[in-house]
Length: 309
Ligand SMILES: Cc1cc2nc3c(=O)[nH]c(=O)nc-3n(C[C@H](O)[C@H](O)[C@H](O)COP(=O)(O)O)c2cc1C
Image (cartoon, rainbow, N blue to C red; front, side, top):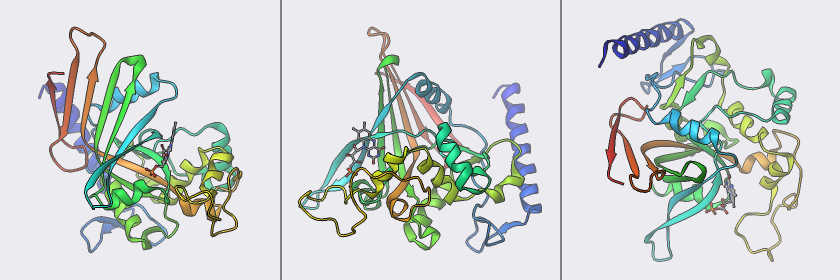
């Protein structure tokens, strides 16, 4: 390690130690499970990742996405066919950026300001985890739960002649039952491990809630897109009458806490373990890089290797 990065790394370790210290002063203690948990009931966030470093590929992918207008990614999960054999399942989804730093459109922010105390969470966390939203009644969530949460996401960014593949595990949050629901509890715990505190924001940790994080994603949808979470059950024959009378197409939802839509709305967060960038800009000298997470889930150590394309 060169002296500059050694000193930067030393400083960030120091910053982290100071943050831990002030978190302890704020009343954060070790829970019986060994994880750091906040002591009051009202507070829902415990201290996240111990690693303040971004993954080495993160800012490049972020800048590629920012240079691309209107991108989707393909999401692969593992399903099981009628013979119970594992089969790939793929679909297009809208990428919602790195969790939880969603950039809200102005109308979404207005809705948050009007309907959520303080206008939402303080902007204290960042991560290397990509996110998308989905309907809990769609197949992908059951597939994640029955396959160890395995996922792969792929972007083809034609303007940049670059393919990005992100492999890892994914977890859905947003069940209105909160941590009383086992899957929600698992998801929050797994996502928490890979969150990083930004800057010196310790005093705000107590104000951050999972509920507000999910509500922000809901607010980022237009009223008609929010209404799609009140559609009849996706994948059911159209000839079947929906069991609930409130379920129909084309509804508009203005209430960010609408009980029917929110019962179905989920944010899926992808925790990357392996990332690959394929650069096809120079046909005679295509390039490919691979990053593998070597140590833990918190992005602490990525091994970078350039491979033959
Ligand atoms: C352009 C485009 C964007 C889409 N975005 C999403 C999305 O963000 N989330 C989602 O769950 N489905 C999205 N879909 C629908 C999915 O491709 C898929 O039909 C749906 O999620 C059901 O898949 P599943 O039953 O395998 O879970 C999108 C489809 C298209 C064509």
